[in-house]
Length: 194
Image: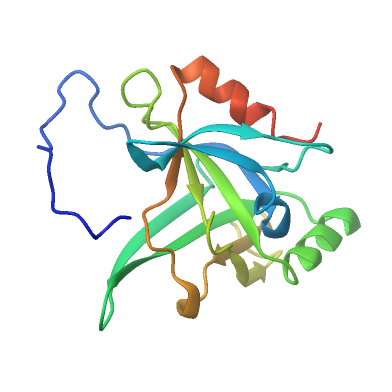
């Protein structure tokens, strides 16, 4: 369990796999109640790493596609009275406002979701590319702004999903990784409804 053990490894500067900022413009949302029933395999030596996910039928994930790094995830550590926890959130923009889009966003307001984000930093062989926000607690719609007069976004809908303060995750976002980037991306892609 994170937080129960002492630190036991060095964290050294990696000049081969240097950090790269930013995110991919594809956000995958999975209904939280569906995510809780997925067969997820965790790395036995590091439980923050997911090595396999059996998608089931029908496939559980839905793509919300952005542009110009409009998917903006954030994890923040929070010192509590008796423990340490994290806030997970993802802010993203929806570049459409059709009736179908509005219906989906309204549905998002009533159910929790889990978010999978692909970062531009892939790490060593892809071991850092896919991050899962809200896996254990879910993320809820907390803000939604639609301003058709916004000159920067041309009326894109700004959305924020995050965990409740009363149910903060105990870990940083989980990472999906198995063998290499291609294998890991195949695991993630298998979760998406076509």
